[in-house]
Image (cartoon, rainbow, N blue to C red; front, side, top):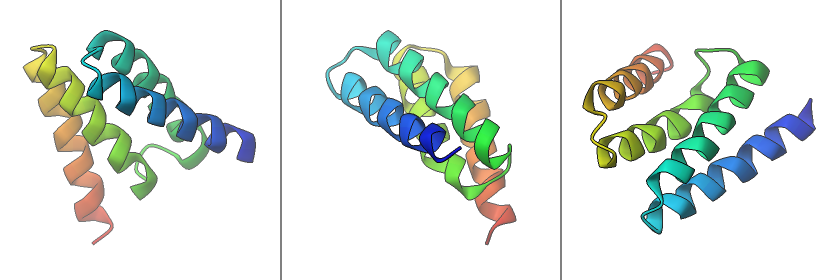
Length: 84
């Protein structure tokens, strides 16, 4: 299972770089895959999901997908509150 977390981290990093380059659709693909792997490994409410959720929110915002961005931000906030 540790291989999945390494893969998720690499996908997350690629998604972040693609976002920095303005390639938001590709960033979304990488970040969505990273988030799915993290959920599979950690469950759907682990603190490890927060950065992926926030980065995915930022990408959705850049794509004009505001409702989706809001849902990801709210999920990230809920997880942070749960773990604080």
